[in-house]
Image (cartoon, rainbow, N blue to C red; front, side, top):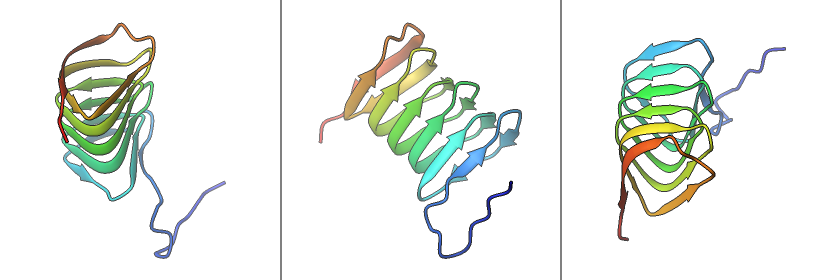
Length: 113
C-alpha cells in the first residue's frame, strides 16, 4: 500500500530509506528519518538516524535520535543516543540521554541556555 500526502499535511516526515544513498544537504521543517546513507548536512526539527542509517556531515536539530552511525558534528537541544549507536565528531547539546551505549568516540559539549 502506498501512502500519499497532500499540501494540507504539513507534518509528513522526510525519509531516506534503507539501501538509499543521498549526497547533498537536506533541510526540512519537521522530521527527517535516515535509514540509508547520507553524505551532507542535515537540518530539521527532529532528526532520526535509524539502526542501518549513516550520516557523514553535520546535523542541526531540536531533537536528535541516534540508533545508527554519525560521522561529523551534531548540534541539538536534546540528544538521544541508543545502545548500538556510534558517533565521531562533536555532540553539542542542552540535554543528553544515553542508553547503555559504548560506541561513542565523540566529544561532548554541554551548551548553556
